[in-house]
Image 1: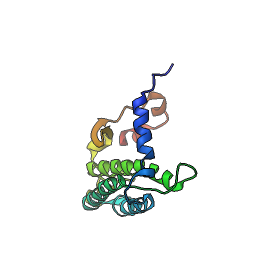
Image 2: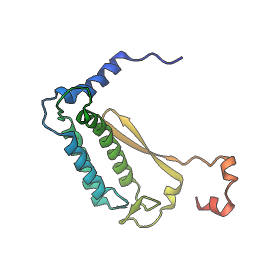
Image 3: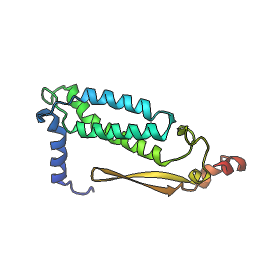
Image 4: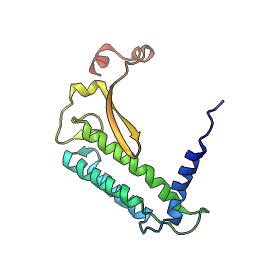
Amino acid sequence: SFAPLDQAQIEAEAAVLLDPLTNPGRESPYEITRELQEAMQEGAMIARTEEGLTACLQKVLELQERARNIHVEGDRHYNPGWHTARDIRFMLKTSEIIVRCALERKESRGAQWRLDYPNKDPEWARKNILAFKEGDAVRLETAPVPEMPEHLAALFDEETLRKR
């Protein structure tokens, strides 16, 4: 059995989803998407710096504000602009989390390549960054990497496991 659905929560989300159809704002979901892609490409790709990530985060936060004024023409039937308006909300929040986590992790490891922190930091080998939604804000905290289950550890030699 499932927990009962909160009708107020459903109605609040429906209002957010329908808002671009009636919002008097002038922002285009396509323009915000283009600017987000450009900002992430420039500031949060593989080779990163504090300066680039900070500028990228500022742009993402600016785009989140502008996204409150997205307006699309038409109605709910076959409306790619409306679909893009819906998607950009989640793209912006995901981008914010990616950039905030990249700023927090001051080392280079795997696809996290910091030009200003070129080496691995052994402290980071054993912790993950967790992101939590608190209202509209994002809260980060670190947590230890869980131990590898025995059935998986058995697949690796001792030297490989020590490198973790």
